[in-house]
Image (cartoon, rainbow, N blue to C red; front, side, top):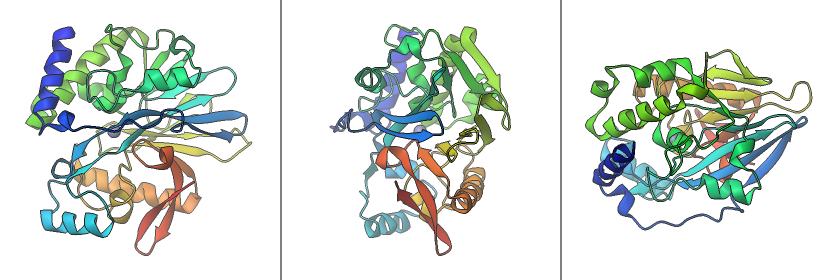
Length: 310
Ligand SMILES: [Zn+2]
């Protein structure tokens, strides 16, 4: 595992120097925000942020088109630095974490969850459940700590079955672009480490009481969002994971193929139907990479949508 981690880090460094850019670490305490869903409390926790070249994110949108769009929206034309927002849900009995963050071996700007949890007064041993949206490094790799041990020793680790099968299949490595092969190798060894604690689930299922799994494929084959129900008290909230990754592009141009989606066409289809549903139901969302600690709603904006923080 140690060699594996070193290998992963070298590969990440080779990806256009992503990890070599100086970074701002957000204020951890300011990054936490809570809301109530009936008797449950949802808190967002920062894992830091990613640093991604724009060329990696939109390889199939003409460069001129994307630069013009980003400039019009006052976004950096070279790189994006999306935040990483994890969701903690407490109901008095369970302490549930959605995704596990990037851990120590992905990017120096991410993997801050252990510090954020400590600042929030949550001991890793008290996490009863970790529910995963998908198997990308910024969501999965933090399940293993500095000592290659599972970071949440008492937790049931709930993983989408389709996603589990995809990352564990023998031919997954050959389906990934060269730049993504680290993702496949990294996922496989984290999933191996999780085996004794894992519980697989299917979309449509209630993963734990009041948490419904919603299939949102495209970003990855088994990508899953979750509706947290208040059980009759309080409006539901959806943890959208990476079905919506950017507060401008995903909302204004949901049809643009995204380089971060494993299946770009399916990713766009999922985005459009999800945005339509969320705008119609006026449901609060937590977006893993959205601003305002990920919290907001989807509003219609002409033929497209806008992210309304709040
Ligand atoms: Zn992500």
